[in-house]
Length: 216
Image (cartoon, rainbow, N blue to C red; front, side, top):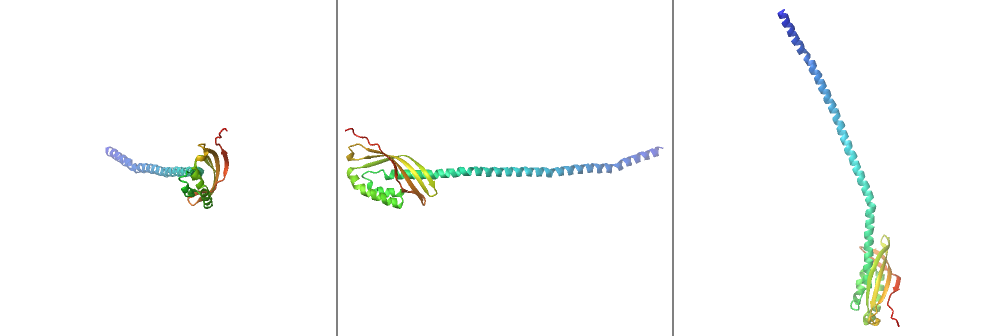
């Protein structure tokens, strides 16, 4: 009985040991299943991250495109404003140069003014100054022109018109110390000549004589 009991106990031990491979396989299967599930989840996370990055990139590109489209009219407006400022300043400098002179600098006036005038207008202005130079020198005429304002009236490619507002004062020995004062407005027709704007015509559109009158 004792040996049989020992054998039984030995068989029991062997039987318990024989069942372990099944348990190990079961555990291994569970581990493999868990690993497969984890592996299956990783690509989804990666795909999700890739999609998020792609959407973010698309949103960034879209926002950049919208910003560029919105900025384009603003940049064009700024460029046009800069051109108009250049034209207005050139027109103001032209009038200031043409109608500021003294008996001492009249001879050089046509050359100084030629920078702002086109060929035909330059020739006309030079002829005009030559005609009045001698008499103005004798009478000691000094012409002073103050630019009140200048504004671009129109801009069409290489052509523009500018309104220039001025106050002009002329003094001479013949005026008995009473200055001749005029408010003059010019319309300057300008064109682009290479890298500069020049005046082609400059008719007077307003002329008000504000000279004080002596009571006789």
